Image (cartoon, rainbow, N blue to C red; front, side, top):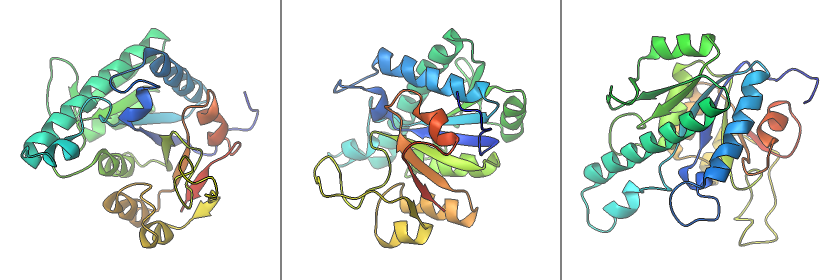
Length: 239
């Protein structure tokens, strides 16, 4: 573990639901889930206060089903429920290795998790618990990117870390274009003007308005989260 203290005291980690699929075409790969939980545990042990947002695309994508004829609001609510399933799975993986967590849902469902209450979430963070925010913002027509941006602002986070399958933001999709080049740094305005789709436009604008940097890195490499948190490894910073 690096000797240098982490650069940030409190961060939000945004992970796509697809990142939990591994090489599967659907659902949760328990190996990937456990490996991600171990990365999170390392960061918590380093003294960082951490909250988490996980997408639901590995189980259900509201936008894609809406495109096939389902009412958009109904499809979005179904997608929000998928994020609750992922949040509970991550909670189980973290608590199995001794990390205390709380799941808070923007759609109240007291039988399985807490409702989202900002002051309670802040108290959990202060006590060293990982808070997993589920169900987006509790309303349709908003993505989990927007939910992550909103929660990072509400929690007073120093940065939003976006864990993806690639090690930063590129000029093109590096999986399709071998000539694609990675950006070391970008401004919020460059992301919006070039339509780089790191996060949706409303989420990027919210990060800009609250001056919260976005750090894009690969969540698939074991130990990379802590490494990037300490300013090492490969990543792209948007500020």
